Length: 290
Image (spheres, one colour):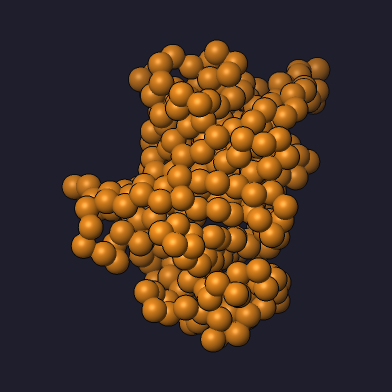
């Protein structure tokens, strides 16, 4: 019976049992899609990544990412964590990695402190707006808790879609996901495929504090959402005349898993691009026999 090695890391933290946990299968050859999905559900983390040989030998690897219920086209903390695991195991060459994913090619830079910075695979695309009152109900908040000064609730993506919402600072800790409200908001939007992820934030000086709920995908709350933070960084830049921005985000505090993310966004020829960086800590390792 074949066995498959896995490693777990806590991403966007330098503390064990902080940040966002991730399981990485550094050699997933021989696993079917159905087995990958079953393993992701069994691990019960917000995401699990599976590393395969690249389709193009010029790239480092093909990386497949699954949440508890489905495969994801792109995600932030799995790319950071996967890069850190491959580097620690000596499975990389050089400090620049290229991961093939459904949303496109993800460029990764290994950092001297053992962390990694990833570039989102697509430029910012704002898809649509959503009613503030319906989004507020999803968060168990009132419409007055939604901050409309810079933007209303927006569907946006740099590789995977989020609803990005600004809230009043005192509302951040009060929010609780309302599953029924999520279903009501998602039902008329079949293009979401049943996945509705709401990333909400408030300013903290020049930085931000944030949370993310995605209960329809099995993630009641996410401790650190790199792809959502990258989307917000690109969106924030789009609302200014600046050429680039850089700042830090803190997420996961309300869960007891404080995460720290470094964000950048810049104007490129094809639109506004963004990156997210952070540290990783190794936690567990083991094998699964199937």
